[in-house]
Amino acid sequence: MDNSAIGFIVIVILYSTIGLMAVAGSIFLTRKIFWPKSEQIFYGIFLGIIATFYLAFTAYFGIDKAWPLELKAVVAFTIAGLIGVRLTLVLIIGYLAHGLWDILHELAAHNIYNAYKPGQLTAIPLAYGVFCLTYDVGISVYFFVRRNDWAAAWRTYPR
Image (cartoon, rainbow, N blue to C red; front, side):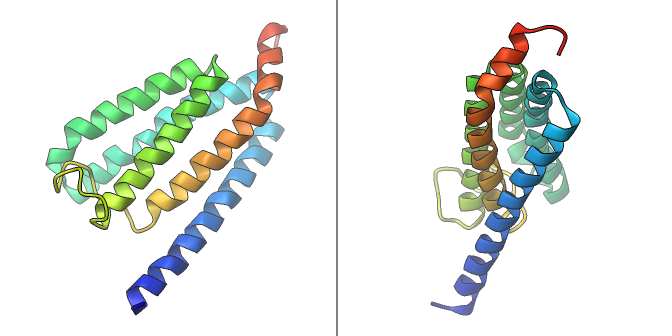
């Protein structure tokens, strides 16, 4: 195994660890700040926000061919997030799909996955997809655990 492969493995481990720490921090903060209903609303809106990172990367890296596909993805994740504001299952699926979108970019960035022509997906920083996949899967597990609390919050007033 060459040095670059070893370096990449170390970076993947570090970014995965940071992703798990971000999940823990998100859970801690949102449970402190929000009531259950508003927590679900926050995470629904947040899905649309995190999807826009790819538009920023498209602009930053100047990959003009990626705009159409990236815009469609942002719209899809935003719609999923808005529906997920009320339907936890859609929120879980939306975050898991976003994690797959993240790792697809990572694989494409390293020419591991050749289903897309160069420039069709935007470039991303090294191991960004690994971090995001870790976060998206971890936070989806939290949503699954929290689903009954969120459902109960929608049945009660005023929270």
